[in-house]
Amino acid sequence: MATSPLLQGSGGRYFADCNEAEVLDRRGAPLLGVARCALDPAGARRLWTLSEAVLADAAGV
Picture 1: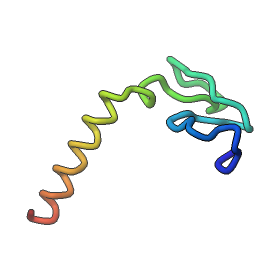
Picture 2: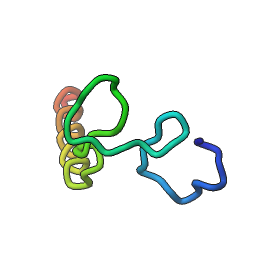
Picture 3: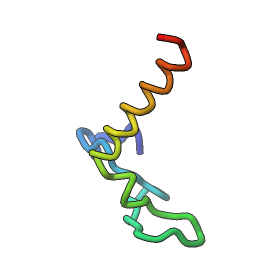
Picture 4: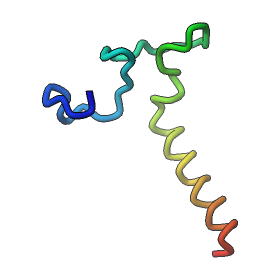
């Protein structure tokens, strides 16, 4: 999947068994699909900013 020319420019998508993963609101078994929160750009930015702050603090910067 990672090298398929059919998916060029299609970043930020999740796949399972060579198919786009279903967006899930609730975790079940088996663990297939992608949680809706994993597709949230605002949440991703918050996580990135928090991660940078934690690492800077750990490094004493």
